[in-house]
Image (cartoon, rainbow, N blue to C red; front, side):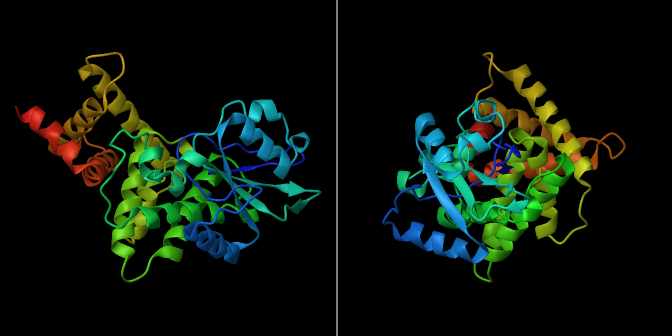
Length: 308
């Protein structure tokens, strides 16, 4: 996710999920080899600064130091809520792109805090220690490289369809930069599963790119963005209704959520082709598989309870 700022051009993309970049403080380097290597790698994409923030006061202070709150249109409204996920600040000043692109991230999402970024961005619904086909370092770097793509001027903002295309492009950019013959298949499994879960359960429409990413990796025919967003919104509504219907409290638990998804997948697969929307079925199957991939023990425990 990314946002435009300067001279009143602000695009705030703090909702939902996506994406990241950070490991260094605004004013001081951290002497971690991983951080230093990552920052060096990002320089191939331009002048990129990685900034970690801790708490609202620290966040606003670093925004002010980096950009000057006076240059941002309605800063109180723009930053009314403390960002929970990383985001990129880009923009133009006097008609020219800002020299430095800045990627901000909460310190709690950095590797130094031993957190798993995928788990955190999926709100820990499926646990804090996930199962990966690749590894946490590679998936973290994929998210950061995604943010680096947003540093380019052609990603400085637009309508929801433009934003959706930007998100999809950033996903593929990061994947193509990091994938090689040894890790390609494993990384593809992890990022497609991550995007499928966030698209169906958490992300704003412009970030509903799970099917686009999955199809691109599989070299299948691409989807129209408006069709993809509508399909994910339909599935989300289906899941919410089912989860609420089986919940024993006001808000469904993670187990009740998983049960709702597995039930819907089974039912969709049993329906005739006339009554089943192919994209809905595709999403439900991929979503169910994604949860089973990241949290196999939790997924199986829900299945065992249902079987009894």
